[in-house]
Amino acid sequence: MLLIFDLDGTLIDSSMDLAISMNATREHVGMPPLDPTLIFSFVGNGAPALVRRALGPNASEDLVQSALAYFLKFYRAHALQHTQLYPGVREVVQTLAEEGHTLAVLTNKPVRISTDIVGALKLSDFFLRVYGGDSFEQKKPDPIGIVTLQREANTGAKDTLMIGDSGVDVQTARNARVCSCGVTWGFQPEAFETDAPDYLVHSTCELLAIVHRHRAVLTPS
Image 1 (tube, rainbow, N blue to C red):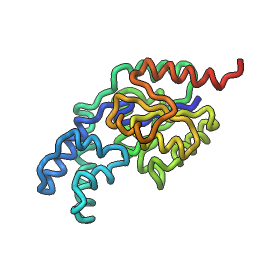
Image 2 (cartoon, rainbow, N blue to C red):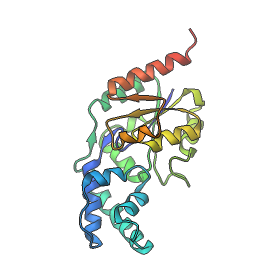
Image 3 (spheres, one colour):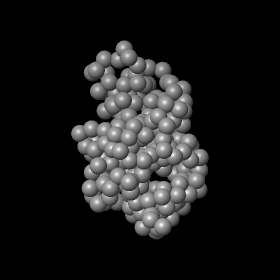
């Protein structure tokens, strides 16, 4: 099977570094800090959308672009100060790879930062590809990332599972006509009330079981 993972809120808890970087950006442009919980709710559609939401609807385009440049530079330098894998992630990723599944990362975070984080956390060897929000002309929920990975892995829709923590991941899976698995330990579990995934798990142990169940359904008896 081709297992495509979101990054933030799915494999890694990057919440504190994102909040620190976003509030540093607001301070840079003369704005007061935001509650980190509010910042977490802005994550999922990529850095440009995060910055736009965090600056508010009255921010000019010039201010947004200036703030985005500052945010990316600051975050690139501080992305690994507090970021860590969620409990059990390393073990389940390693197990899935050893079972012969093809693993990939598809995130809306910039690819350079994403690749650096995956490498620093010593996960690179498990993934066929790490694709970011700037790897293609369109970000998630556009299906281009999934379609590209399917072609590279020579895998069809039935053998593909998109795993993520937000409605964006579910929408991406739907647009690519593949199944989705939502994880509730991430940033936006409430989004699944609107965008319900095919599977919903609360722990990495459950995730492993779901992958096994999904594969069993596909395998003729």
